[in-house]
Image (cartoon, rainbow, N blue to C red; front, side, top):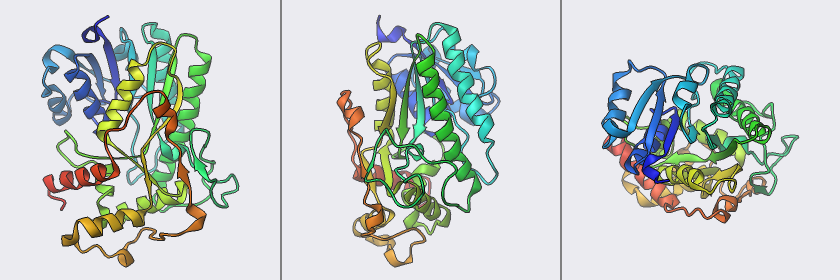
Length: 338
């Protein structure tokens, strides 16, 4: 079957990753069903319809995790479940998010046409924290699961909710993949995603990577939270993220399923700040003034990220940490943040 005849679905097509993935899929000749929470949001609809080839190969559906996703999934061979509520000022409904993820997985199973479901997970669900919360294991890999409830608190309750929901949802969707005959489930646990964007604004995960340069206290606290949770900060470029999702789709039937970490850099907030200080001296980054953790030699956090499982399947990262940070800064400049 020619790739141009493949029909795929992206649940959550208007966010940072979703829009980038939709654009790449359409560019590569796939027929894409993309969902948005509301088709009346002209900025999001207009963005997706502006992609080259969208008139012929893109169909938009109004759906969310809890409602009407089956209509978009029908007739598709592959489904990308990208959608997830993101941390804001208010609390997230963890149970509702987990139930929504399960609803999409069961809809894929019922449809009959879906061969593989690729779920966008988070490395935040793969914490190498010891079960008692007292220090870290030496290696972070696919066998690690974030202990719940989290053994520490953060001032942003919705960020705590987000990590809990991503951990529980990933466990549930992998269980469904094991239980439902004929449905292969691949979980790609992403690090902090940097790079450029096709959106009309700078995504939050991108701005966090240059938060040292703009006195962004929320960004600093987010980096510290990730360090407290994972030991260091996993980072991956948006282009590699999109490529990894498509790689997971193209893998031969039955050859790829289960959980894969998707990040090829693992650094401390201090190392990010140090890189910025040396490569962007015009911003006068002062390591001593950062709100985030800047301990360069904390032996309690000497964790190694093992991301070889995806490499062993044949995937190749094309972008480095430098690319991720530099492209994020270019994105921030384009939108006037720097």
